[in-house]
Every structure is written in structure tokens, then in C-alpha cells.
Amino acid sequence: MVENGIISTMGLNIKNAEVERLATEVAKAMGVSKTEALRQVLQDRAQVLGIPDRRKSLEEFHRMLEKMWEENPSIRQTKITKEDFDAIFE
Image (cartoon, rainbow, N blue to C red):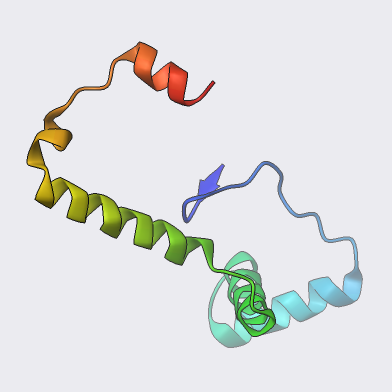
């Protein structure tokens, strides 16, 4: 699964009744799903801890690509073959 540009290979299975209760209450108070509430809370905590935000890195990468394409329009016209693609992700 890909969510917000981040590949996730496994879902989260909460087996703690207190965590489940808190997730439910926080989500209800925020007016969002439990998944979204947990994402926001964990994102806030990650920011406090100084963990880089991958979404920002992805946004910066996209801005860099757009700038490169503006400066060199012929690059965007180049077609990548299946062989090129496969070589990139070997």
C-alpha cells in the first residue's frame, strides 16, 4: 500500500485496550478516523523529536524535477523504455 508517498508493507494491529480506547476518543474529538488521528498525533511527535518529514522531502524532490524540466524541456520529452525502467529498479 502507498499512502502519502510512503510505501507501507503491513497494517497496524493494536492489541492494547487502553490504546484502542484513547485512539477512539482522540479520533472522535478530532472528527477524523482513528487512522488519521494516529497519523496526525504521530506526525506531531515525530516533528518534536526531529524526525524528518518524508512528505516534505518528496515535495522538495518534485519541485526540483519541475525546475529541471522548466530549464531543460527536452528531458521531459524523453521516453523511458521498459529496459531503462527495469534497470533503475533492479
